[in-house]
Structures are given as C-alpha cells and as structure tokens.
Length: 172
Length: 120
Image 1: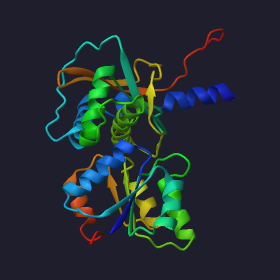
Image 2: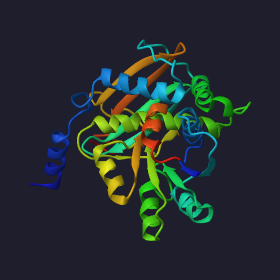
Image 3: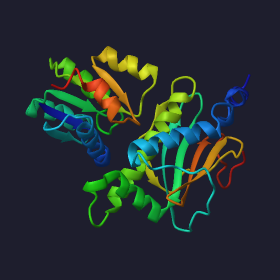
Image 4: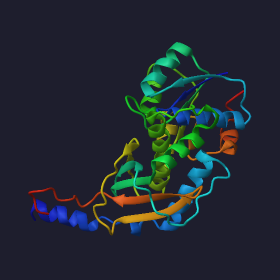
C-alpha cells in the first residue's frame, strides 16, 4: 500500500461533524455560554439574520478524531456590544481593540470547549483567535447555526479543516 | 484569604472575580496572573492561600504550572476554572493534585458548590 493510499483510507475513516453533533446541541451549548458569560437574561433566538458587511470572527481550532474549528462570526458593532456585556462595570468608556479580541475570543473558547467535550475521543484545543477565520474546506463537514442576540445576527459554525484546500499551482 | 486568579483573558479574570462575589465569597484579597509562568512566580512571591487557574494559557499552561509548583514543594490549594471539562482533563487535574475543576461556562451556584469547603 502506498502512503497516498494510507492517507486516503485515514481521510475516509474520519467522520464529518454532522455525524458527531447536531444543530440543536450547538444551539444549546451557545445558549449556556451566553447565560454564563453575557448575562442571565441574554437569550439567543434561533433565527437567521443578514450579517453586515463589516464582520469579525473569533474561533478556536480542535485537533483530534475530528479536526476543525468552532467559529463565531458577527458584525463588528455586535462584537463590541458583546465585549461590553462581558466586562459590565469594568468596561472602559472607549473599548480598545484588545478588549474585543479578549472578550469575543473568550466566548469562542468557552463554546469551543463545550463542543470539544461532546465530541468522541481526545482532542486538543487551541487558544482563541480573532480576525478572518479559516475557510470552509468541505461544505459537508459543517454544522452551522444562525441566531440573533439583541436582534443582531451571529453565525456559529463548527467546520472541518480537512481535506486541505488546494493551493494555486497544485492539484488535489 | 488571598486568592490568585490565573487566566490569559483579562475579561475572564474579571468574570471569575465577579462570580466569586456573586457566590458569596466577598472581601478576599485578589491577585491576578496572566499565564501559568506568571502564576508560578506569584505563588512564590505573593504566597496565596488558593489558586484558581485556567488550563490553556500561553508560556506555561495551568497543568504545567501546577506540576511545577508541586515539584518545587509548594502545596498551595489549586483548582482549575477552564473550558476543558472532559473526564480525561478532570482525571489529569486530580492526578496532578488539583482540588477541583470548574468547567466554563459556570455560574455562581457552581462556584458556591465547589468552593464552599475551600474558601474560609
């Protein structure tokens, strides 16, 4: 057997995320994170909304039997509002970018940690990142929910990192 | 009591401090550390009575900090407050000498349950 054959067999054996978690579970995980971090009365309404042009994402990566990322995407203003809600009385008058990176990243960390806990086997979780998220590599390997928080849209996507996307000049 | 809170997220440190207060643990002296290395150094310099630490942090993780502390002879009571709540992580934490592991997301009831026998 060639290395390529072995790689293909391993890839075939890997489950896609929809075999491991469903939208209702992601919604429940996110809802609990919101109540704990954002506030007891802060609910996520499971309705899609149109994301604005200026969006920001926070995410954590997971490596294990399933490998991918848990990505939260929302408008920049909503990310700032979330950061203020987390900081409450310690929120500064003018939010620094650092505060948004910290707060919005921490929400991804908590949601990602809970997603990891329901997936089978051992996985490693990365520190959170904020910015432009990893691309969706395989549309089948995605479990996404769209919710509204205080009327503003937020997308939460649990998305696989495999198989690797082709890069210009190579074939997959 | 002096309580050391270690988390690389300033926001999460604020939330932990707030939740301690909401759980009824008021009036304690709080020291903050921004990663495991900082926590290790502050256990040595500040002599806290309890450490509440995140798991995943840059420079030195929470579990590395706990192991380093125990290897150095420190017996400071140490618990995790972390998004790593799996059974495997709980076992690992207990084996290294942690008193408890509070998984994020948490609330004041979780804090009250876990800390009532620990914080005087």
